[in-house]
Image (cartoon, rainbow, N blue to C red; front, side):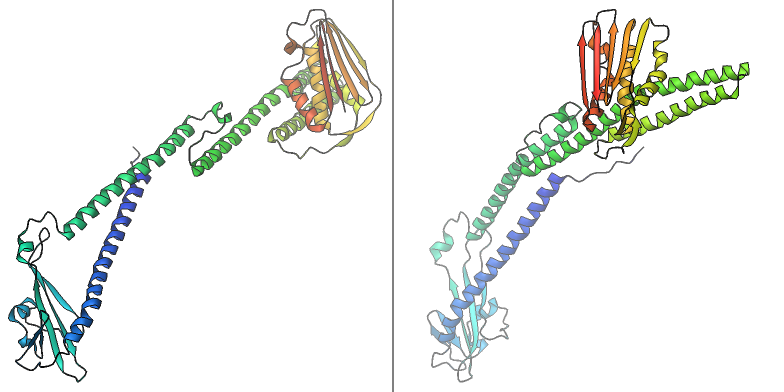
Length: 421
């Protein structure tokens, strides 16, 4: 049994990562805000307390009270409550405001705040400026719904919940088109792949859908070409295979009767030609199935000999048929791709032979034009039976590729096909 693995969810990863980043940013800005608040208090209060430290009349054991602050020359001269608040240990730093909250908790007002400031005067004397500042009694005792800190926490929690809700909405709006894209891709088949690509709202998803559709279309076209190749191959290879089988049987009979070697050589030559024809046919059909523009090379051929050779090779199709065969050719040399030419002419002759039960078949070659006419004593019921089958589809395709002029005409009891090279 194949072990199962828990695959990560892109949606969950995005949500968790976003919440984590927002939380980190919120905490960082909160710490920065608190730090900036303390710095602001220091910057605002330190100069004032520095000026208070310059008051005259301060000496050891004789502190001076100025504007609710006590100015002393020694730490022990500050109020005892203030010193206890700071654990009776003065700071070693000068010009740094020291402060502590008195009483209160997260959900209530503080009772007050204690501050002190250590400074050196211009004359080098050490001074301590400090004081205890309490809220008025009525403010300390009033009912408190929420302190500013609590409001900040509630606001932060509400903002976070609002953000998460908005994030879920965004994720849902993104997930729906992605889900639609997945379902569309899963449902693609040979029919729907040819239809226009749906709109998935976002340009990135539409681009992805077009890539998927183009890829599947390419694969479908390649499969269609392979199927066409197999169909054409099975159709075209019937003649050389029949020639090989017939001549093989003939060769066996000749050997049994002890006929001269010349006859056997002739039969072997036919088999060899049929084998080469099969090879050339396969190469041409493979080229045709690849759908490229590299056409097989042309060569000088005797068109009349091509016609007479194909007529002879396909004569077995007229065996035991009351069909009159008329062949008229004239010597003509032309520069053509031999195998495609052989396929086209062979298809026209084969179709005429196959679909004439009784009547007449005419094969006429004049210069580079070949006309095949088959006249049947029976009415033409299905034009497809008289030559519009697989072989003629291949003929049309080859003629179109090479720029040859092909035409056909169906009348009652008569079918005419013409190819002009």
